[in-house]
Length: 385
Image (tube, rainbow, N blue to C red; front, side):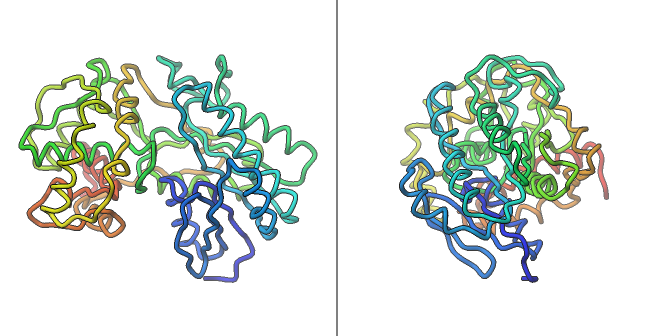
């Protein structure tokens, strides 16, 4: 590690966004990193974890004021709740607890980065204006992302530190036990289809199969987040961050099926949260049969999130040109060898590679494999070879 003059505090360090953000910070070599999460993590030379419940004011008061060397806060923590209104209190309170206790202790605080999404445009509610732009007006509340940004803007007034709000599309990356990880949903759903000897069917709403959608690679998102936090021109701005291309499930689904060596069958609308509830025994058998890393079924996939994404029977994309105008020009690079990429991804996954078990070993719960699938899909259309 180079001599680090910057200290990053990553709230939500065990999530798909937080993990990839930490990985990128480590690779840069000039950051000291502190990860916050309820679950403990493994410390390294450049990274130390602090186990804290961000919803517990006493726990925050006891642990966060000691983080006096923090220069940048990367806030990616999230608490799931059953309704949009119920999401507001916990997610606003966690941000308030972090900012209140760290800001007062960190004399050299420079920037606070908020991780948001397209909910600020009402994308979760139904058909919304596309491409969505950062300048689009807010929708009728409740919306915790908007409340978080409003709180941060008020708190920053008159202060030396700045803020940024990052708005990705659906994020694909590696993390177990994460409530919003579409790659995990697809990987496990396909693996179980393979095990049961049935073709791969798109389980979403019929109207969702041919609508335009985009995603955000977690590694790309990490780079954009750090760029926005360290580029002076980005101060006090929000940015849409996406991979830079669009696709339809009707085009992508056959590619996914081929990747898993599965036949594809016509779409069939299914509620995954219901139909996959009885698959725990199947999962346990798969773990034993194929020598997979033992992972509790409840941590393997969030079926309700899959249902949510696959229900979007309307176009789902935003305009990413503002970030490019401000200087971030990176898009998801087409990979000429997605199989090599997926083998690399397995090193961080929860499945052990078994040559005779294509459905899991090729993509694995590392879930970066779905990014590899997306890359292969684009390569089929425009090869770099």
